[in-house]
Length: 500
Image 1 (tube, rainbow, N blue to C red):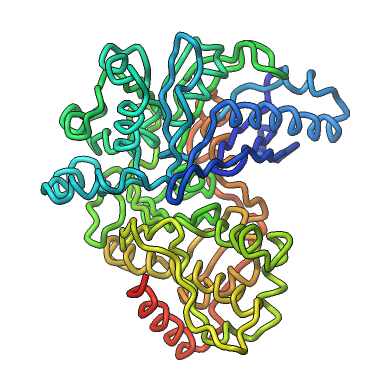
Image 2: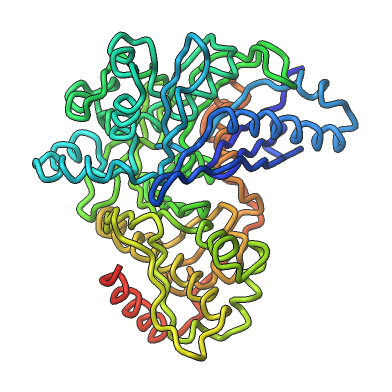
């Protein structure tokens, strides 16, 4: 009997796996972190072998947890997996040698800023308008194309091999498909392809004009299949039998939108992970942004494409990690909430979390983080509170921009991701937005979305109506703070932005 779903959520700092039953009840889950590599300021790299080991370990642990609940063996449960869904950090990219199955050097992570100069040059040459019209994106090192060109130019012989199609530029999902299938398959989906600056919003194939502009040979780009397609089957994966179909792929933020059941136009979600990402469904047509948001593919199911608008803040949960790892003012990420609650407000401290530059709607890759307003009475509690304010105020800027593009404010925002467990952060967010927040019991919406897409692909679910949100227990947050206090916060934050 094949009735279970396995979701692989390959994130920026760790890999999470979920085992779910046909009702999408989580039977077992596990998260395994992997090393981050920072060769110099602004440079962020991953080693795919370290990613792969974390995925294998997370699969094993999730099956072991599920086996205890089911009073079965992990091997028996693995034989019941009907399909695997993958969701992943989207713009992170590397060069795959299919003949060896290994990435050539490290992957360049979406946070990596080393190609800011290349983007600035293209902007000065007047290319951004064309790039935005064709891809829905902006000229920013966040996206994959300039990273691919950099990798081809900084590893001996790779560019010539890329022109011959001997190596492939792959986002993490395609690398995982290749490894999970034992090297038999490699492909990505439109939600990931649309983040490369090389995929047109309409047209359904790699854009040769964009590839020429970014100096990326089309021959080195992998096949692109619908999000619910059969991408391959497992072979020689530790802990899994051969022959399990990989039947769903979505970029992480699109997966969260799908997992939150935002199937109708103008439904929106915000995921608080390493960064924070607001996305709103715009239906079957791409909506050009007037407010410097991103127009992107949400998913493609068979031959039908759904689009979305997205705004990205590069630092969210990573701000808390920075307070822990770099400043040492907390020991665990969970400590930030009680510390921040110990003061009534930030005491005039303003925190702009621009450690990796500013994303939408500002798009300033060279901006740097700022803590402003420190006095002799400032404590670590005030800094912690200001950090949570800063995360929420970034999202307020994004939601304002989204209202411009959609034509009306979003009235309900569905939230997920690890940092959404922080009740104080969610209350601050509801206060500065003035809209209702809905938080589901299960915050792993990215993995939930990947599993849902896989189940749709393999036929466990008939159509989207089988995946529609049900009457579920949600935690709701509504504005409590006075409007004048919120306005003061926003004005102070806007002033501080001008100093970054």
